[in-house]
Length: 398
Image 1: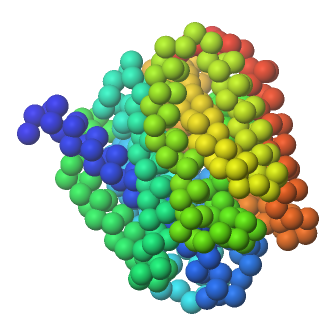
Image 2 (image 1 turned 60 degrees about the vertical axis):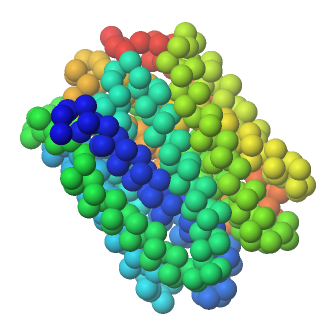
């Protein structure tokens, strides 16, 4: 097998892994109606499951990035998908509420090792001039997995039960992880040393910290939508689980088709700073639309969230991959860590949101909760204005 076919098979296996990764991320939200009945829990338990999952994936972004830097993104991606999938299988067997929460934390931990490594691998396979397109493609396949996880897993759970549905998604993850061992091209050179001084500069870089805060806005809006939409539609709007699954899949369906387009727009854009600002503001407004408590407004919100979330994810990850400076990375050798750090900031930054959001729902209702969620999203977009345009337009910041 030649180098080109190695890369092609590696790219395909990586994209399939991204689908299954997303299934195991998003299916908990769609299965919660069944889980809540068995465990006799309300929406606050969904907040705990989502919060600890996000905490796990956030806290281990940097350890995952360090592992990828030292041992290679290939090994990190394989380890991450296997660990998260095994934790999903074990979680399907537990009868203890607290154990389930801990296992969701471990699922997040494994996904932290997969995420930034996957971004690095896809951009390496597709080349330096197609970074936005590559990230957009990877995000599109995650959205496909999300659609399957949200809508498809409702149907699977109705037939097999939620426990068997989790076993199925976990086995799929283990299977693709083992397949990746044979299909992902072996790196010709794996880094074995990590510069502590450069790592320290990376962690305290105002550029990366600012980008992490900006990314938090997108993560917050997207996380609330994919985590709470199904239960919101069933609990508040009183519609069937199947119809709720269809509506909740709309953001992901829109994301599938628009993410590569946004990537292309970024690759060709001369003013990505303002492009990102517009996308972020519209995302916050889209979340607020759910407070109208009308099915038409909810469907429009779903469409808008799917489109405007592509701006935050695609543009920020692409910018972060390209940043290099005497105060940051040198020669792109720490690109995986760049992505890990901003992703860690954003995910840890919203790990408390599902818990608080569910408490607000219980105390003040869904409308107030959606308004507050949208308002926080808008506030977190402010650092875009403070960053120099050079961060967005150049590959080197002096």
